[in-house]
Image (cartoon, rainbow, N blue to C red; front, side, top):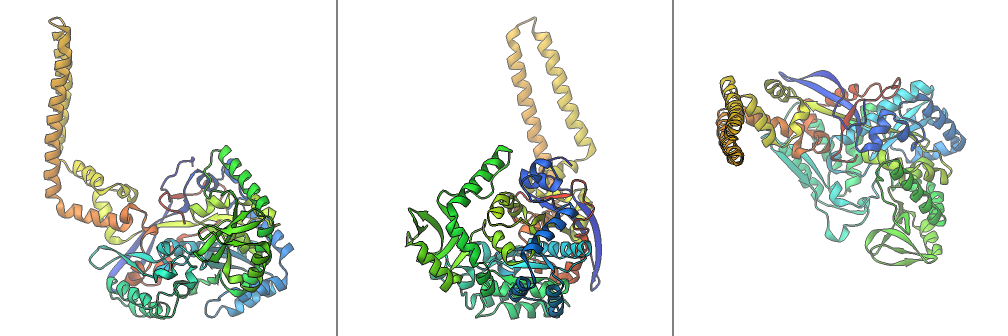
Length: 567
């Protein structure tokens, strides 16, 4: 496959029953790409692979990383990591075996989002699940999937909402408000109070009643209740949904994680200027190779956040000391060191340092990332090495386009591929109306245009002997005639649209399901839309398509377009 960003992928079908209704899942699956760097990396282009420590499709890359991990992690380090990991019900023995046998992890994660956010959240998790299983067979060692809940993030507006299509086939946005005085703080410190319960009731009102409703509603009730934070509710929900797949979770703010990452944060403080030079040089190399730098390197910026007077604030170097970006509060190195030791929960890594912290605390073989994550991880190889760590193998997450039976019938009726509905609806409707023009009308329009072109040329040739300047007026008359014909054609198309109003309404609804707000469904729709209709088997159907995760991937991998988003 060439370097273009195409929506192509392996297609499969899965069938499940919902009462008398059969859910036919036509699923387009591929590893999600974004810009040129990730597209080239997925395809295995040497220019892009040079920016990563091993290629996702090379089994030997995972073996090399396992050897590096074993050089840093013994039993004690794995026992410490296990203390921070939340195991699904019944998996405690598997975690103990993981420690005993010197196991590894496949990690993924993101900031917590209301009701798990859009579908890509579970796609990330299921990619990690499938990759961990394949690596376990490949390495003959226990490999667990671990989801990092980035509860220290502070972007409330990015986390406080989700989308769902209601029983009336309308897209609804459900969101949670937070006390204004708490905005800007880490998410795990924000207390929405009764807002979580209110949002849960709103979500349930939009979803249908089915045989699957009671246990799912009970899961949401346990998670989204007063007293819980959004990260806590998110973690409970994700773990509850994916318990059958053996997914483990860790909270970035867990005391064990904070204590174990202390050495990395101290090193970042002491070598911030050196690390800035390393990252700046890497950015220069990427740009020289023709690639975009995903995360800008800010002059004087330290890759740490500190909770200060204005919330979670970026730390900057300042003439031998430091200051916070928004409040301007100044801190000495000694004060920051004391803060790290006495209040470790108030200092956290930024997006560039977080993967380093994760690989320092956990025996990570591979990190599953979306398009933006996979892109900025290409910036980090020398930065990892500055912290004496080999980067994990970056595995682009799987993406999927789920086509319900009712949507598939509409696509079949109009002979459309799903990707064609990504265009603005008026363009889709116009194209469909044109295809619905009676053959006689289409032929007559073509004949008139042909006759105008031929007659005008003949007239210009004949009039040249009379007056060569007549060419302009004749061409103007032809243009006016073509404009009038185009206007007539538009009116005919509008008449066709009126006759097909019901069918076009079906098409518009199909577009809503596949590309709500003009974006891929996985970036907008909550998994609960499908779960309430088709039950947990929906997740199994999707997971079954995420196979094989990496073995035998010697050619360019199928890709799904993800230019509209990052995860």
